[in-house]
Length: 73
Image (cartoon, rainbow, N blue to C red; front, side, top):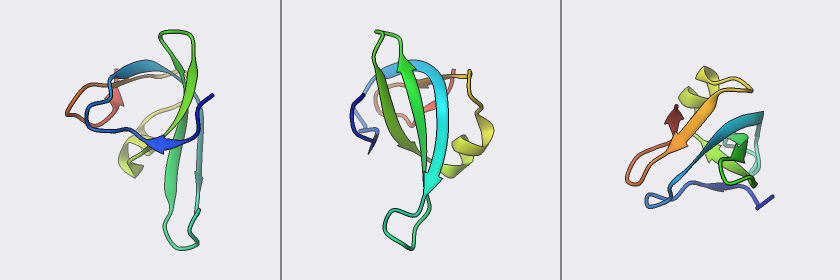
């Protein structure tokens, strides 16, 4: 599993949400994360927007296209 990071604008990936978490890493800002089992068999942890984090559940498909934010697939 790669370290957690915010998805870049040019990143392209898709997979299934295997976990959700949140935390105040810097002590003042809440960050929202999802763990994703990628279509290529790997796994990764990505930081996502709060609104999407509240909408998705474990088992949902999530897609990140180039020049777009991650979204339910």
